[in-house]
Figure 1 (cartoon, helix red, strand yellow):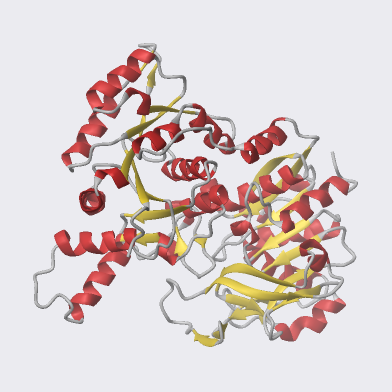
Figure 2 (cartoon, one colour; figure 1 turned 180 degrees about the vertical axis):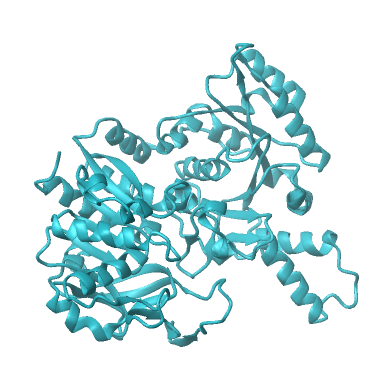
Length: 546
């Protein structure tokens, strides 16, 4: 049963996509936390995929992974970074998952012979997702993916309309995010697209209680009055969502515009004092007044769409903030390093990061970047596939095993990296097959790791036992540990049973670490991940600092 005191805020978007509903949802949550409320954030995605795990990063950006192994939309990353609340499988749903559940129930005869329809069966399943698995939250914020008017989103709009009907409007608030385009020739912001978007929302039986209006400049009072009148929204609930130079300014900007006060008014909550957003103010202060700047290269294969590396981008910035520095990230397409000297791209950077990725394209370029970092004593971090390539680089270029490779690309190679077919998960054996389904079949979610005493990893974390999030199918083969040691590389982090390598490093290098997991997924601006803090500090201390 849902806590009768829990209130629900539904965030929809209109006019155009990519306005930042995820960031808006996360910022609303942050301001409510600043008022002492407990929040939970959820994402309802209308696409038919079961999850984004099999989607190209160019299609959907980064796949965010939770501790419990859920592959989810990148907006859950915004939620965690801004709220500090760890997301779970209960916080992300897609139309694929909804229909899968409905069909499974129909096959099991749970509908007692009824004709299965979008209303009520699909909408009931959506409502179950919204209302289930809650405890003592004060607010649950649910973002509806896509744009009002999309055919895929109609069942979700009907479902949230029904939630408001079932619970009562005193427990539900609808927030609509729209765009106010500026037309240079007219010299003014235009409200008509927002009016049309709200009319479309009203067609589904939903009256927005607040408008978040993305704009390049402050909204004149006349335009606010017009929006309030024609969209049937209180004027003080027309909130300007202006462009800012840094995303961590958004909670402060929204609060300044009166957003959290409007939420309190809607729910009849006393508004005696402003939200405590001091932690966000401190972050912005460091960003605006850094003590210096570092330049870090990220050598990846999806650099044409930086949303593919969203968590990494933010985690690097978090590490810089913790050191009171700012960071200039140089994004490099790894394919370019396969045809041109690595030094042409890397001779002006203070550190090199090789992130994860799938497929053979750009692989050799990543190896060239790792070789350059090793030979030139540049601080280096490899992540997931980046760790596998770091091991292969050592085996080929230091240990002399030229056919060292991953069986993902060459079944006849020296199998330094191979397909993992079984492993332990919470005391149970997980089994996978080479020709099995791709979706949800990797080593996903949080796994424990034991760190070698005295290693760089142990010093970075300040402990010998950690837990980090994974997303991969292939593993470094432990039988090559002695060979790697002779090549100057040690395995400093292993699974508790010692069977799976988790971290490798080069003790003679100023700072060289590669990890099989994704540390960027757990980093937050007010709680930066220790790996990124240490990397940036090493860069600052390194003689290559520009």
